[in-house]
Image (cartoon, rainbow, N blue to C red; front, side, top):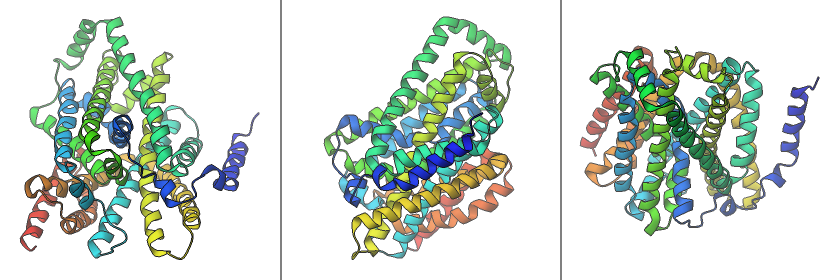
Length: 441
Protein backbone atom coordinates (compact mmCIF):
# COMPACT_ATOMS: atom_id res chain seq x y z
CA UNK A 1 0.00 0.00 0.00
CA UNK A 2 1.32 3.44 -0.91
CA UNK A 3 2.21 5.67 2.03
CA UNK A 4 0.70 8.90 0.77
CA UNK A 5 1.93 10.90 3.73
CA UNK A 6 5.53 9.92 2.93
CA UNK A 7 5.06 11.00 -0.68
CA UNK A 8 3.54 14.30 0.44
CA UNK A 9 6.45 14.87 2.80
CA UNK A 10 8.92 14.24 -0.03
CA UNK A 11 7.01 16.58 -2.35
CA UNK A 12 6.90 19.32 0.27
CA UNK A 13 10.64 18.90 0.91
CA UNK A 14 11.33 19.28 -2.81
CA UNK A 15 9.31 22.48 -2.86
CA UNK A 16 11.52 23.84 -0.08
CA UNK A 17 14.76 22.73 -1.75
CA UNK A 18 13.90 24.07 -5.18
CA UNK A 19 12.02 27.13 -4.03
CA UNK A 20 14.38 29.47 -5.91
CA UNK A 21 13.93 27.51 -9.14
CA UNK A 22 10.15 27.40 -8.88
CA UNK A 23 9.92 31.07 -8.03
CA UNK A 24 11.97 32.21 -11.02
CA UNK A 25 11.48 35.94 -10.42
CA UNK A 26 14.67 37.77 -9.59
CA UNK A 27 13.21 41.14 -8.68
CA UNK A 28 10.18 42.70 -7.04
CA UNK A 29 9.23 44.16 -10.40
CA UNK A 30 9.13 40.70 -12.01
CA UNK A 31 7.07 39.31 -9.14
CA UNK A 32 4.43 42.02 -9.29
CA UNK A 33 4.55 42.18 -13.12
CA UNK A 34 3.29 45.74 -13.44
CA UNK A 35 3.00 45.79 -17.24
CA UNK A 36 -0.23 47.03 -18.80
CA UNK A 37 -2.79 44.50 -20.00
CA UNK A 38 -5.57 44.72 -22.56
CA UNK A 39 -9.23 43.79 -22.58
CA UNK A 40 -8.81 40.00 -22.41
CA UNK A 41 -6.18 39.96 -19.67
CA UNK A 42 -7.98 42.69 -17.76
CA UNK A 43 -11.29 40.83 -17.83
CA UNK A 44 -9.78 37.65 -16.44
CA UNK A 45 -7.81 39.52 -13.77
CA UNK A 46 -10.99 41.24 -12.56
CA UNK A 47 -13.05 38.04 -12.55
CA UNK A 48 -10.54 36.23 -10.34
CA UNK A 49 -11.31 38.25 -7.14
CA UNK A 50 -14.97 37.24 -7.48
CA UNK A 51 -13.99 33.59 -6.97
CA UNK A 52 -14.20 33.64 -3.18
CA UNK A 53 -15.77 31.50 -0.49
CA UNK A 54 -18.87 33.67 -0.63
CA UNK A 55 -19.41 32.95 -4.33
CA UNK A 56 -19.03 29.25 -3.66
CA UNK A 57 -21.11 28.97 -0.48
CA UNK A 58 -23.96 31.48 -0.62
CA UNK A 59 -25.67 30.39 -3.88
CA UNK A 60 -26.44 26.98 -2.38
CA UNK A 61 -27.44 28.44 0.97
CA UNK A 62 -29.69 31.26 -0.26
CA UNK A 63 -31.32 29.18 -2.99
CA UNK A 64 -32.42 26.63 -0.41
CA UNK A 65 -33.69 29.42 1.84
CA UNK A 66 -35.37 31.63 -0.74
CA UNK A 67 -36.11 29.41 -3.72
CA UNK A 68 -36.23 31.13 -7.09
CA UNK A 69 -35.91 34.56 -5.48
CA UNK A 70 -32.17 33.89 -5.27
CA UNK A 71 -32.08 34.43 -9.05
CA UNK A 72 -32.89 38.09 -8.43
CA UNK A 73 -30.36 38.31 -5.58
CA UNK A 74 -27.53 37.02 -7.73
CA UNK A 75 -28.55 39.09 -10.73
CA UNK A 76 -29.02 42.41 -8.96
CA UNK A 77 -25.91 42.18 -6.74
CA UNK A 78 -23.34 42.16 -9.59
CA UNK A 79 -25.19 44.98 -11.38
CA UNK A 80 -25.10 47.24 -8.33
CA UNK A 81 -21.50 46.36 -7.56
CA UNK A 82 -20.57 47.05 -11.19
CA UNK A 83 -22.13 50.52 -11.09
CA UNK A 84 -20.29 51.35 -7.85
CA UNK A 85 -16.94 50.11 -9.11
CA UNK A 86 -17.38 51.94 -12.39
CA UNK A 87 -17.72 55.16 -10.45
CA UNK A 88 -14.62 54.33 -8.39
CA UNK A 89 -12.24 53.50 -11.24
CA UNK A 90 -13.19 56.25 -13.65
CA UNK A 91 -9.81 57.92 -13.18
CA UNK A 92 -6.22 57.06 -12.32
CA UNK A 93 -6.34 59.45 -9.37
CA UNK A 94 -9.37 57.76 -7.81
CA UNK A 95 -7.78 54.32 -8.01
CA UNK A 96 -4.42 55.55 -6.70
CA UNK A 97 -5.91 57.16 -3.59
CA UNK A 98 -7.59 53.90 -2.55
CA UNK A 99 -4.44 51.77 -2.65
CA UNK A 100 -2.35 52.14 0.53
CA UNK A 101 1.12 53.59 0.10
CA UNK A 102 3.69 51.61 2.10
CA UNK A 103 6.55 54.01 1.45
CA UNK A 104 5.08 57.25 2.73
CA UNK A 105 4.05 55.75 6.07
CA UNK A 106 1.45 57.46 8.27
CA UNK A 107 -0.94 55.94 10.77
CA UNK A 108 -3.85 55.68 8.32
CA UNK A 109 -1.61 53.92 5.78
CA UNK A 110 -0.44 51.40 8.37
CA UNK A 111 -4.00 50.61 9.46
CA UNK A 112 -5.19 50.40 5.86
CA UNK A 113 -2.42 47.93 5.04
CA UNK A 114 -3.32 45.93 8.15
CA UNK A 115 -7.00 45.78 7.14
CA UNK A 116 -6.09 44.71 3.60
CA UNK A 117 -3.91 41.99 5.12
CA UNK A 118 -6.64 40.77 7.47
CA UNK A 119 -9.01 40.64 4.50
CA UNK A 120 -6.61 38.40 2.56
CA UNK A 121 -5.95 36.13 5.53
CA UNK A 122 -9.68 35.93 6.29
CA UNK A 123 -10.50 34.89 2.73
CA UNK A 124 -7.81 32.19 2.77
CA UNK A 125 -9.04 31.00 6.17
CA UNK A 126 -12.61 30.57 4.94
CA UNK A 127 -11.54 28.77 1.78
CA UNK A 128 -9.12 26.51 3.65
CA UNK A 129 -11.84 25.54 6.14
CA UNK A 130 -14.21 24.75 3.27
CA UNK A 131 -11.55 22.54 1.70
CA UNK A 132 -11.04 20.71 5.02
CA UNK A 133 -14.80 20.14 5.30
CA UNK A 134 -14.96 18.91 1.71
CA UNK A 135 -12.33 16.22 2.31
CA UNK A 136 -13.34 15.21 5.83
CA UNK A 137 -17.14 15.38 5.77
CA UNK A 138 -17.96 14.59 2.14
CA UNK A 139 -15.06 12.71 0.59
CA UNK A 140 -14.30 10.94 3.90
CA UNK A 141 -10.57 11.54 3.56
CA UNK A 142 -8.18 13.07 6.12
CA UNK A 143 -8.67 16.83 6.22
CA UNK A 144 -4.93 17.38 6.52
CA UNK A 145 -4.42 15.59 3.20
CA UNK A 146 -6.82 17.85 1.33
CA UNK A 147 -5.58 21.05 2.97
CA UNK A 148 -1.94 20.14 2.35
CA UNK A 149 -2.52 19.46 -1.34
CA UNK A 150 -4.72 22.52 -1.71
CA UNK A 151 -2.33 24.97 -0.05
CA UNK A 152 0.76 23.49 -1.69
CA UNK A 153 -0.91 23.87 -5.11
CA UNK A 154 -1.93 27.45 -4.30
CA UNK A 155 1.48 28.40 -2.93
CA UNK A 156 3.53 26.96 -5.79
CA UNK A 157 1.38 28.33 -8.61
CA UNK A 158 0.14 31.58 -7.07
CA UNK A 159 2.51 32.42 -4.21
CA UNK A 160 5.76 31.60 -6.02
CA UNK A 161 4.38 32.41 -9.45
CA UNK A 162 3.60 35.99 -8.52
CA UNK A 163 1.10 38.06 -10.42
CA UNK A 164 1.86 36.27 -13.68
CA UNK A 165 1.07 32.94 -12.02
CA UNK A 166 -2.25 34.22 -10.66
CA UNK A 167 -3.28 35.59 -14.03
CA UNK A 168 -2.28 32.60 -16.16
CA UNK A 169 -3.33 29.76 -13.86
CA UNK A 170 -6.37 31.64 -12.59
CA UNK A 171 -7.52 32.35 -16.14
CA UNK A 172 -7.31 28.66 -17.07
CA UNK A 173 -9.31 27.71 -13.99
CA UNK A 174 -11.94 30.35 -14.73
CA UNK A 175 -12.38 29.18 -18.32
CA UNK A 176 -12.91 25.63 -17.09
CA UNK A 177 -15.34 26.69 -14.35
CA UNK A 178 -17.48 28.93 -16.56
CA UNK A 179 -17.60 26.46 -19.45
CA UNK A 180 -18.29 23.32 -17.41
CA UNK A 181 -20.83 24.81 -15.01
CA UNK A 182 -22.78 26.95 -17.50
CA UNK A 183 -23.10 24.32 -20.23
CA UNK A 184 -23.73 21.50 -17.78
CA UNK A 185 -26.67 23.33 -16.20
CA UNK A 186 -28.07 24.23 -19.61
CA UNK A 187 -27.81 20.59 -20.72
CA UNK A 188 -29.52 19.35 -17.54
CA UNK A 189 -32.51 21.63 -17.99
CA UNK A 190 -32.85 20.85 -21.68
CA UNK A 191 -32.62 17.13 -21.04
CA UNK A 192 -35.00 17.04 -18.09
CA UNK A 193 -37.31 19.82 -19.21
CA UNK A 194 -37.80 23.12 -17.45
CA UNK A 195 -41.46 22.28 -16.86
CA UNK A 196 -40.59 19.15 -14.86
CA UNK A 197 -38.11 21.06 -12.71
CA UNK A 198 -40.62 23.86 -12.18
CA UNK A 199 -43.38 21.49 -11.08
CA UNK A 200 -41.08 19.71 -8.64
CA UNK A 201 -39.86 22.99 -7.12
CA UNK A 202 -43.42 24.25 -6.69
CA UNK A 203 -44.36 20.96 -5.05
CA UNK A 204 -41.36 21.02 -2.71
CA UNK A 205 -41.82 24.63 -1.57
CA UNK A 206 -45.58 24.97 -2.06
CA UNK A 207 -44.74 27.77 -4.48
CA UNK A 208 -41.92 29.04 -6.62
CA UNK A 209 -40.61 31.40 -3.95
CA UNK A 210 -39.80 30.70 -0.34
CA UNK A 211 -39.50 32.97 2.67
CA UNK A 212 -40.82 36.49 3.26
CA UNK A 213 -39.84 39.55 1.28
CA UNK A 214 -37.98 40.99 4.28
CA UNK A 215 -35.95 37.79 4.73
CA UNK A 216 -34.89 37.81 1.08
CA UNK A 217 -33.79 41.43 1.46
CA UNK A 218 -31.53 40.31 4.32
CA UNK A 219 -30.11 37.54 2.11
CA UNK A 220 -29.36 40.11 -0.58
CA UNK A 221 -27.69 42.53 1.86
CA UNK A 222 -25.57 39.75 3.36
CA UNK A 223 -24.26 38.57 0.02
CA UNK A 224 -23.79 42.05 -1.43
CA UNK A 225 -21.99 43.49 1.61
CA UNK A 226 -19.69 40.50 2.08
CA UNK A 227 -18.71 40.36 -1.60
CA UNK A 228 -18.20 44.13 -1.69
CA UNK A 229 -15.95 44.02 1.35
CA UNK A 230 -13.87 41.19 -0.06
CA UNK A 231 -13.40 42.93 -3.41
CA UNK A 232 -12.80 46.43 -2.04
CA UNK A 233 -10.10 45.20 0.35
CA UNK A 234 -8.35 42.99 -2.21
CA UNK A 235 -4.95 44.43 -3.03
CA UNK A 236 -4.83 42.24 -6.14
CA UNK A 237 -8.09 43.74 -7.43
CA UNK A 238 -6.90 47.34 -7.24
CA UNK A 239 -3.53 46.45 -8.76
CA UNK A 240 -5.40 44.73 -11.59
CA UNK A 241 -7.47 47.85 -12.18
CA UNK A 242 -4.31 49.97 -12.40
CA UNK A 243 -2.69 47.49 -14.80
CA UNK A 244 -5.56 47.61 -17.34
CA UNK A 245 -5.15 50.17 -20.10
CA UNK A 246 -7.49 53.13 -19.38
CA UNK A 247 -9.43 52.71 -22.63
CA UNK A 248 -10.21 49.04 -21.76
CA UNK A 249 -10.84 49.43 -18.02
CA UNK A 250 -14.62 49.92 -18.02
CA UNK A 251 -15.15 47.26 -20.69
CA UNK A 252 -13.10 44.75 -18.69
CA UNK A 253 -15.15 45.56 -15.60
CA UNK A 254 -18.38 45.12 -17.58
CA UNK A 255 -17.37 41.74 -19.04
CA UNK A 256 -16.07 40.46 -15.70
CA UNK A 257 -19.33 41.43 -13.99
CA UNK A 258 -21.31 39.64 -16.71
CA UNK A 259 -19.17 36.49 -16.30
CA UNK A 260 -19.63 36.56 -12.54
CA UNK A 261 -23.41 36.97 -12.93
CA UNK A 262 -23.51 33.99 -15.31
CA UNK A 263 -21.59 31.89 -12.80
CA UNK A 264 -23.88 32.85 -9.91
CA UNK A 265 -27.02 32.11 -11.93
CA UNK A 266 -25.54 28.78 -13.01
CA UNK A 267 -24.96 27.79 -9.39
CA UNK A 268 -28.50 28.89 -8.54
CA UNK A 269 -29.94 26.89 -11.43
CA UNK A 270 -27.81 23.94 -10.32
CA UNK A 271 -29.20 24.20 -6.79
CA UNK A 272 -32.80 24.36 -8.01
CA UNK A 273 -32.25 21.34 -10.24
CA UNK A 274 -30.80 19.32 -7.36
CA UNK A 275 -33.65 20.36 -5.07
CA UNK A 276 -36.10 19.03 -7.64
CA UNK A 277 -34.42 15.60 -7.57
CA UNK A 278 -33.39 15.18 -3.93
CA UNK A 279 -35.00 15.42 -0.52
CA UNK A 280 -32.25 17.66 0.91
CA UNK A 281 -33.40 20.76 2.77
CA UNK A 282 -30.12 22.19 4.02
CA UNK A 283 -27.08 23.42 2.11
CA UNK A 284 -24.83 20.73 3.59
CA UNK A 285 -27.30 17.96 2.76
CA UNK A 286 -27.61 19.28 -0.77
CA UNK A 287 -23.85 19.33 -1.33
CA UNK A 288 -23.49 15.88 0.25
CA UNK A 289 -26.20 14.44 -1.97
CA UNK A 290 -24.29 15.67 -5.03
CA UNK A 291 -20.90 14.31 -3.96
CA UNK A 292 -22.23 10.93 -2.86
CA UNK A 293 -24.20 10.37 -6.06
CA UNK A 294 -22.81 8.09 -8.76
CA UNK A 295 -23.39 10.51 -11.59
CA UNK A 296 -21.04 12.83 -13.42
CA UNK A 297 -22.50 15.69 -11.36
CA UNK A 298 -20.31 14.84 -8.39
CA UNK A 299 -17.14 15.17 -10.46
CA UNK A 300 -18.29 18.46 -11.96
CA UNK A 301 -19.13 19.86 -8.54
CA UNK A 302 -15.78 18.82 -7.05
CA UNK A 303 -13.83 20.26 -9.99
CA UNK A 304 -15.69 23.57 -9.93
CA UNK A 305 -15.55 23.84 -6.15
CA UNK A 306 -11.84 23.15 -5.78
CA UNK A 307 -11.00 25.38 -8.76
CA UNK A 308 -12.98 28.30 -7.36
CA UNK A 309 -11.45 27.92 -3.92
CA UNK A 310 -7.97 27.70 -5.46
CA UNK A 311 -8.47 30.83 -7.58
CA UNK A 312 -9.82 32.72 -4.57
CA UNK A 313 -6.93 31.58 -2.39
CA UNK A 314 -4.46 32.45 -5.15
CA UNK A 315 -5.36 36.11 -5.44
CA UNK A 316 -5.67 36.49 -1.65
CA UNK A 317 -2.24 34.92 -1.14
CA UNK A 318 -0.72 37.17 -3.80
CA UNK A 319 -2.29 40.21 -2.11
CA UNK A 320 -0.85 39.22 1.25
CA UNK A 321 2.63 38.51 -0.08
CA UNK A 322 2.71 41.68 -2.20
CA UNK A 323 1.88 43.82 0.82
CA UNK A 324 4.61 42.09 2.82
CA UNK A 325 7.03 42.34 -0.12
CA UNK A 326 6.58 46.06 -0.59
CA UNK A 327 6.91 46.75 3.13
CA UNK A 328 10.20 44.81 3.20
CA UNK A 329 11.40 46.51 0.03
CA UNK A 330 10.73 49.95 1.47
CA UNK A 331 12.66 49.17 4.68
CA UNK A 332 15.57 47.22 3.21
CA UNK A 333 16.93 49.67 0.68
CA UNK A 334 20.48 48.36 1.10
CA UNK A 335 19.66 44.71 0.37
CA UNK A 336 19.05 43.15 -2.99
CA UNK A 337 15.56 42.74 -4.36
CA UNK A 338 16.18 39.01 -4.78
CA UNK A 339 17.07 38.64 -1.09
CA UNK A 340 13.81 40.38 -0.16
CA UNK A 341 11.90 38.13 -2.53
CA UNK A 342 13.30 34.99 -0.88
CA UNK A 343 12.22 36.34 2.51
CA UNK A 344 8.74 36.81 1.07
CA UNK A 345 8.66 33.19 -0.13
CA UNK A 346 9.59 32.00 3.35
CA UNK A 347 6.95 34.23 4.90
CA UNK A 348 4.38 32.77 2.50
CA UNK A 349 5.26 29.20 3.48
CA UNK A 350 4.94 29.98 7.18
CA UNK A 351 1.69 31.82 6.56
CA UNK A 352 0.15 28.96 4.61
CA UNK A 353 1.21 26.42 7.26
CA UNK A 354 -0.35 28.45 10.08
CA UNK A 355 -3.55 29.13 8.16
CA UNK A 356 -3.79 25.49 7.09
CA UNK A 357 -3.51 24.19 10.64
CA UNK A 358 -5.99 26.80 11.85
CA UNK A 359 -8.38 25.95 9.02
CA UNK A 360 -8.37 22.26 9.93
CA UNK A 361 -9.02 23.01 13.59
CA UNK A 362 -11.69 25.65 12.95
CA UNK A 363 -13.52 23.77 10.18
CA UNK A 364 -15.40 21.77 12.82
CA UNK A 365 -16.90 25.03 14.18
CA UNK A 366 -17.23 26.78 10.82
CA UNK A 367 -20.67 28.28 11.45
CA UNK A 368 -19.55 29.68 14.80
CA UNK A 369 -16.65 31.85 13.59
CA UNK A 370 -17.88 32.62 10.06
CA UNK A 371 -20.17 35.45 11.32
CA UNK A 372 -17.10 37.40 12.46
CA UNK A 373 -15.69 37.55 8.93
CA UNK A 374 -19.16 38.38 7.63
CA UNK A 375 -19.18 41.34 10.02
CA UNK A 376 -15.61 42.33 9.11
CA UNK A 377 -16.13 42.33 5.33
CA UNK A 378 -19.46 44.13 5.63
CA UNK A 379 -18.04 46.91 7.80
CA UNK A 380 -14.97 47.26 5.55
CA UNK A 381 -17.22 47.87 2.52
CA UNK A 382 -19.13 50.84 3.94
CA UNK A 383 -16.40 53.54 3.68
CA UNK A 384 -16.03 52.77 -0.02
CA UNK A 385 -19.71 53.48 -0.62
CA UNK A 386 -19.07 56.94 0.78
CA UNK A 387 -17.04 57.65 -2.37
CA UNK A 388 -20.30 57.88 -4.31
CA UNK A 389 -21.38 60.81 -2.16
CA UNK A 390 -18.12 62.65 -1.50
CA UNK A 391 -16.43 61.71 -4.81
CA UNK A 392 -13.27 61.10 -2.80
CA UNK A 393 -11.94 58.19 -0.77
CA UNK A 394 -10.78 59.08 2.74
CA UNK A 395 -8.15 56.62 3.94
CA UNK A 396 -8.30 58.22 7.36
CA UNK A 397 -12.00 57.49 7.75
CA UNK A 398 -11.55 54.01 6.32
CA UNK A 399 -8.81 53.15 8.83
CA UNK A 400 -10.91 54.56 11.68
CA UNK A 401 -14.24 52.91 10.91
CA UNK A 402 -13.08 49.59 9.48
CA UNK A 403 -10.40 49.25 12.15
CA UNK A 404 -12.85 49.94 14.94
CA UNK A 405 -15.53 47.64 13.52
CA UNK A 406 -13.05 44.80 12.97
CA UNK A 407 -12.75 44.72 16.76
CA UNK A 408 -16.48 45.27 17.32
CA UNK A 409 -17.21 42.38 14.97
CA UNK A 410 -16.49 39.89 17.75
CA UNK A 411 -19.39 40.90 20.04
CA UNK A 412 -21.67 41.48 17.04
CA UNK A 413 -21.10 37.94 15.74
CA UNK A 414 -21.60 36.50 19.23
CA UNK A 415 -24.77 38.40 20.12
CA UNK A 416 -26.59 37.87 16.79
CA UNK A 417 -27.55 34.27 16.13
CA UNK A 418 -28.82 34.56 12.56
CA UNK A 419 -25.90 34.98 10.18
CA UNK A 420 -27.91 36.99 7.63
CA UNK A 421 -28.57 39.63 10.32
CA UNK A 422 -24.87 40.11 11.05
CA UNK A 423 -23.92 41.89 7.82
CA UNK A 424 -26.73 44.52 7.83
CA UNK A 425 -26.16 45.22 11.52
CA UNK A 426 -22.40 45.63 11.11
CA UNK A 427 -22.87 47.83 8.04
CA UNK A 428 -25.43 50.05 9.81
CA UNK A 429 -23.14 50.52 12.83
CA UNK A 430 -20.18 51.25 10.56
CA UNK A 431 -22.21 53.87 8.70
CA UNK A 432 -23.07 55.59 11.99
CA UNK A 433 -19.44 55.56 13.11
CA UNK A 434 -18.35 56.81 9.70
CA UNK A 435 -20.81 59.71 9.77
CA UNK A 436 -19.76 60.69 13.28
CA UNK A 437 -16.10 60.53 12.29
CA UNK A 438 -16.79 62.73 9.27
CA UNK A 439 -18.13 65.47 11.53
CA UNK A 440 -14.75 65.76 13.24
CA UNK A 441 -12.72 65.86 10.02
